[in-house]
Length: 494
Figure 1 (spheres, rainbow, N blue to C red):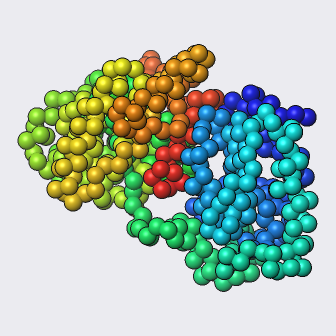
Figure 2: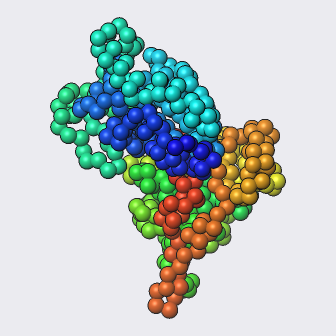
């Protein structure tokens, strides 16, 4: 059986066709010696491979653990993932890491606290290079080296001063750790290890707090609402507690999360409790009172709705200086209830956009990369600069721009191959802004999931779903899963 990289169209296919069906069998690893989607502390591994199946698994310089394998989308640049792989290998005392996007295969070797590239080939060269890979990370090679290291301790890596016992490898289909894992070392030691993984020694430990992300562009029609609701669903499915806040008077996110359960404005149950009320009252309308439970995603997500009436209250709120910081105060009251807050914003430079960016820690900028959207990035940068000056007076750090998200992108093959790379490259070159690795393409499933309705009596009401719930195996769902992972990584919650 030969490997054909062109058959890997997404990360899932790189995992299944390259790693599971080709590499692991070729390298001599049977199903009982590798684990997929493993979580340990704050670290989540695609594949964890063992030369010997030993219980309990001790991670030290003589460990039978052989290699971590990480699969990426074929369009992703592997250079962007080296730092994270280094963290995995050094934190877990793993000697080798394999990094691949299907088009390219790399193997890194841990030497103390650093990693070195020891092998590299193209996916199409894999057939003729497989013996070189076997010599490095094949199961037989590891077993031989493991026996040698037991006979000659001086051959081991002396840079590791402490061994780590995995207090249970938690897989998505595995129960809690057995007592044999937990009894091997004191419980306090496991707590220490988990703390070290959550807070790498190279970074100071910081108090965990809710992370607030504004999704903003002053050009309309670039996919802000689509990004907010589906990114929220992806992050929620990753186990994070999510709150969505709709700060746009058009209320598109309120519709997209299925909170408009009426067909006649006389039955409007949102007009008396929405984001406007949160902003105008210091003593009343706290977030738990106004946030509604939305079933557009499973698990459910809390949403603070907007309303068309929001636009007529802008002047009134603008005259009240405290309205600009009211959302910060109100979110402080629920900082232990949520991990992530996503704020949808109006496509303008108005008060509500200002409040969103004053409140947020991070900014995500969806863009279709077309000329007007690109020109609008100049306005966005100037807007951020003004608001950061205000944030400085509040002794709040400036907003961190996560980058421009390519959104609503044509799937035309010629466009993707020739035009898209040029447009992506233009963003940092012309506007000095980073570009996210994930690309959200314009797909029918994204439109269909937003247009779902249900009939209640004589009424037809909106009943939208996130694309991850509407069609979880679709390319659109996979793209938002990748976006969720990338955003969580960028804000230190991966």
